[in-house]
Length: 121
Length: 108
Image (cartoon, rainbow over all chains, first blue to last red; front, side, top):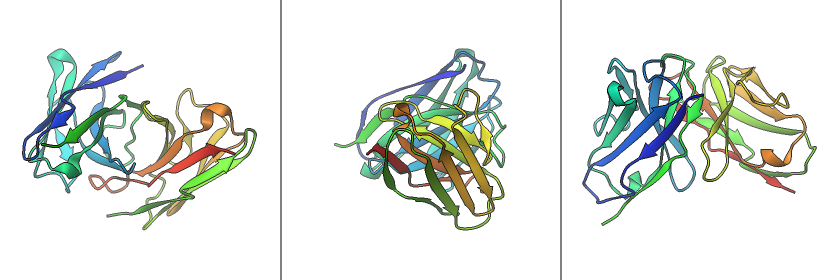
């Protein structure tokens, strides 16, 4: 069974870049599509985007101008960079796996436990 | 964007109760609807994918149904470990994928 673990700073200053990494164990990063999802303090969930091991990506249009997701196949990791953050980006950030190859019908079969990122000066 | 409306937003139920949660899409999403269970501080868990398919390892008391715009998640006999928040998620409108607002199931 795939296991995912998020890591990165818990506090980011406004206007800076939020950077998180997800480490995949129990499976190959070449086997799935890999997503980032966030949950706001009011509990709403928002999909950020996904990446395939080839480097192919797809982003939520509402975040596309500020987001980059990258993959490191040698370390079985993928990463999220979110630029120009504001307090509205404060959330718990999850990484998750998608076994459906990222098309219509995709779902997330395994998730990390999440990491809280607070945007504050 | 497609809007996903879950109801109720919360409910109180007893162990052994039959529980039904509804998710309504603002337009037809065929059967591209998934359900998750989330407990505080834990990783969310996939329960049902593509409206009615039980994910591996999920107890058979969970079931999903529906197509088009109206979907339901049913727990046939609520167990103590089922007290959690449940979310629906549509995957018809990639990359505009959206989640429902959640239904919190509490102990009566």
